[in-house]
Image 1: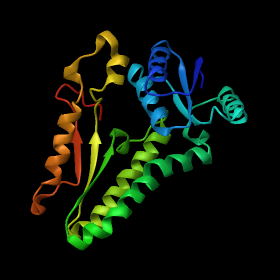
Image 2: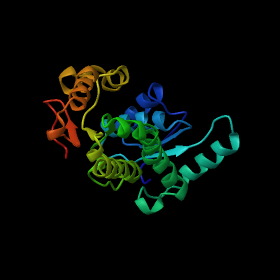
Image 3: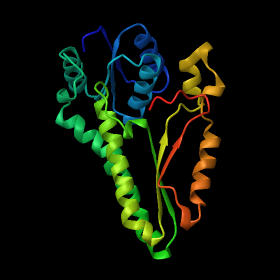
Image 4: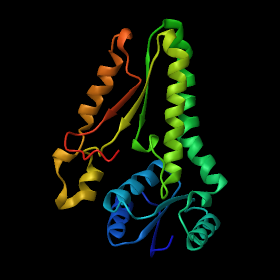
Amino acid sequence: MTNPVCAIVGAGEGLGAALAARFARGGFDIALVSRSAFQREAAAKAAMKANSTCHTQIFEADATCPESIEKTVGDIQEQKSPAPIDISYKELEDIFRLEVVGAFASAKSVLPSMLAKSRGSIMFSSATAAYRGSATNALYAIGKFGLRALSQSLAKAYSKGGVHIVHMRLDCDLDVPIMREIYGKSFDVNEMAQPSDVAETYWWAHHQPKSAWSNEIELRPYTEKWSY
């Protein structure tokens, strides 16, 4: 990282996300440290929304283990560049387990019974990162690319068995409390996707006739600027 760095230990979707957004707007690069991948991703998304040019990196560490915190913060201080080549093997393995292995495990647990009944739907919630790489957020893109490949592969293998498998690309922010907090006074409900409306699309996809299935669906509010 070449800019001043704001390291947030215990980064999450509440204060951590708000801090990430504020310091990103102030020109800082953001280093997010947490045990929870979900919490780190929420804070990372807030930082990137606040300043798309900031460099955001995520680190896994446990605050109850001081040695891991000391090592991680030390690693952050030694960061020279957010280039993909600097990704550690552990980071790569972690994102693969999070985005691909977890999704595969979920699909594997339900596919046999669905195939036996020749019906059922499996929907993977994804993002624009599944369609393009990133110089500054390569890990996220790698994970989502992998998820999309998994979805497509499962669809090609098992659609003929009556199981509808869909990769849902959410190119949007959802109208949830954390996003209202991040946007503050600039929050505009018209620029958000309503979770209930997104759920309606999942419901619609589940009920598509077999002769006209969608295996790739993208969702965005009508005001979205089509960044991809």
